Image 1 (tube, rainbow, N blue to C red):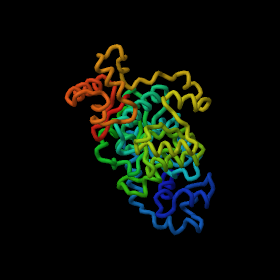
Image 2 (tube, rainbow, N blue to C red):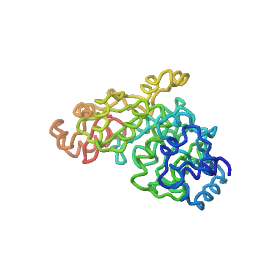
Image 3 (spheres, helix red, strand yellow):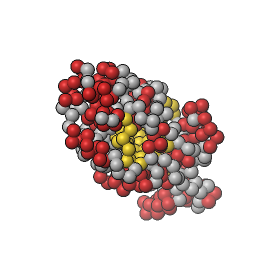
Image 4 (cartoon, rainbow, N blue to C red):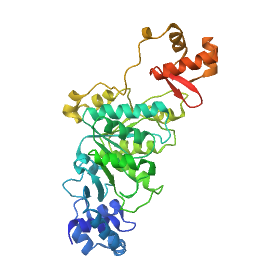
Length: 359
């Protein structure tokens, strides 16, 4: 039995997990000896290993771009190895070397606002352009926007999955998963092939997400969001936590505001993160690039007098069309026409419920 096969037995033993293995054998165990002559604390679990699942994982690892990174493997990410309960084994599809590069985890709501999507994409693009890998969870919303932001500037991105490597969840992100691998990124999970999405898997997934990264950025999150679990885990692991503030009227900003009250670093640009990490990033600080998620909106002098008047009536908190009619004195028809122009010019953004805010 070789080391990879032995680690597969340890990783797939029902009810075992890294804490029990390391508690019984320390952080430098001999996996073959553990499996062939297990201590009493591990014996019962190892006796129930599904050997067919072990064989299936070994077969899967023979596919192009596939790898099994066990504890002690030279490509096992060192930063992840520092957390209290690092995975015994990782199934990886794509570039394994990306897991050891400096990374920032970007997380947030699965149902974000348009501003949240734009911010996630822009921050990820900026940080990836500066040389950081972007790590996220391949979920809908903020996660997908962060992965896309990195890919759109030719950067690296790591998707940490809460399923088996062959089960993309949600299914609508399959094309994104393929794009990540084809563009030099990586999919990674501690769950064997065939594992479906289960609610208890995602908090476990989150410790890997934060454990791979130097810091975690929360873009938008409600107060009961799973993103706050990732932020808490990052803090417990001794990693930095960053949060983007938002409107007091936006329920998806409340999780970020809670983090800020608890000591997270407030950031307004990607460069804030690079400067905050400072020495941890070494030469990356000098490579920071201007954050350009899109062309800047036109200056006020390029707008008509009526457009400038309307823009003056719109703040950074979303406001309804009815209130804008009252503020501006414009007819609803004229107002709707000008709002469309201002939105196309990038001066305002539409929010749910027919409300608008300045960008």
